[in-house]
Length: 132
Image 1: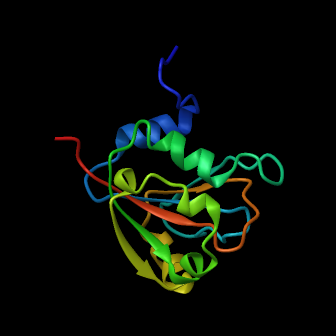
Image 2: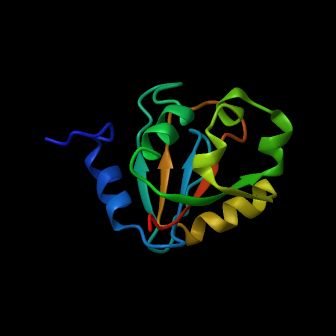
């Protein structure tokens, strides 16, 4: 059995398979997921608010080396606690795009992770870095 916090088999496998520059999108319950292509959808949503986006990202950060993140301007405008509470040193440099651009970028992600978060525009693209 694993000793780290990340116990979800699909998430653990995803993190272990990431290369430098690969992207994963962690989303709220309402974000549309790409239907075409090879984007893996990992649906964690159990009920409204479970799991939260912040909890999911914080757990991913225990195993994932993040170089940067991409966030929608609409997300920043809301100034929600889930985002402002993230450890900025662990999510790297910021790129800001529109919500529509983020949806387009999701087509290039290795995976989309859907949470039970029910806050508008609660979506964050994590870009994988290297640990050396």
